[in-house]
Image (tube, rainbow over all chains, first blue to last red; front, side, top):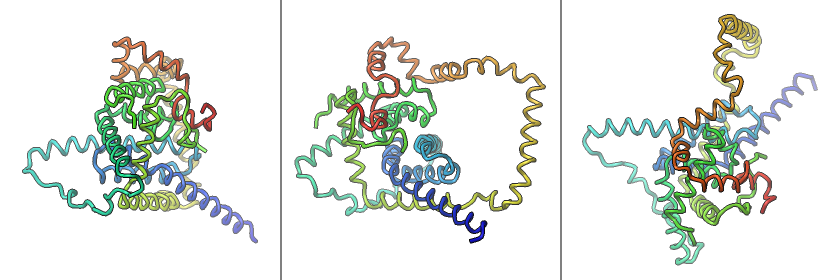
Length: 195
Length: 151
């Protein structure tokens, strides 16, 4: 086999391995990222758009970086995207306040089959779990943005302090402060949160 | 493997019941995601992976020869900019920050961060007790990063 052809094969193998690794990484974070985006934006489609944009930006700009750097980079991009969308929504809200009220078309899009609960749990346990989820979602929504970010990145995504600081663009001390404050606020609202 | 990755079921002894239970509930919420959400996330992922495989517009436009031709010009331009900056005495402006860059960032972060200022004003000693118990880098992520060594 000629040298250039061997080189091309090697390059193709590397690119394929990279694509596989990227696919695997994105699959491992997509649901958690969506949860974080939804908690910040409180809108399903906006949250999906934010995650999609973050995935594309990571793939285009940073897919050649070492895999170990992907997670904090991805969440940094996502946080920036969420903040941009929140700002844009604030501006849009001010403009829309001057316009006549219009019904949100997204309300019609709910699919009853997709929304139906899965039948794995007994009804009483499911009810308790539903209540706990609603309570936790409500408490998380009431947290300031930075506290909620710190809590979800650390507790749900499992980032350590340094990675969370990188993702949030602040110091490790700030992450500890935000996380501690979030825990205090949640404990105050939920108690010890027994199930 | 990333530092923060690991078995989500593993926890550190330092985690409170609230942290453990809230994570379980959040994970249960994720597992209940509807088909439409999963489908859209899957599409987004496929699009991102395809985008990563394509070379950028600039790279396609220049081609390998164009990149090779532009590289020396770019290096020269950067060298000229650095020389102009140094000769104009710009380095004096950065001396203070260069002496202690981490300290400067911490101060900036503290001043711009409402929570940190509140914490200072509150004189909340419980935070320092909690932070001391956590240590550096310990907690949910670090416990997982260590592969659950502290379980």
